[in-house]
Length: 172
Image (cartoon, rainbow, N blue to C red; front, top):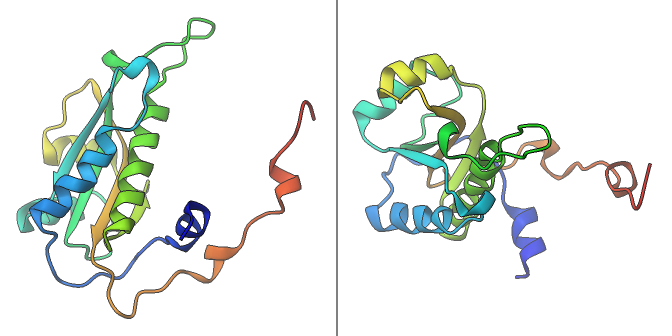
């Protein structure tokens, strides 16, 4: 399967088997996030692996979008370690952490692990529940696990806007 087909087949899993992820699988997913490109290779990402019953119970206090997944990865970035664009002070760290999250998500899929990227969570609750340092910014939450046999993409999964509406050459 070529990469375009692979990327198109991956979907947000919202129904998981009640089965833990093996440590070797978690390690391989993390290894892929670890090689993701970041601004000036500063690697400001910080990944919190949540894969115990206690951690998942805490997570349920922070989001309703947990989908009863057996595991999750909270991707944060360290603001102090971000490359900064000198023209306007923009940080690369949110983009870097998003690239890392995408690598995690795609590697998970390649290993048969489903995921759902969740932004609907309370960052303050995450900070409290998981003692996240002040200079770390929670960015993305990946709910993870083996897809339930009944899992399927939402109807809107394959809907895309026409390429002409989102891609422009040279100018608008």
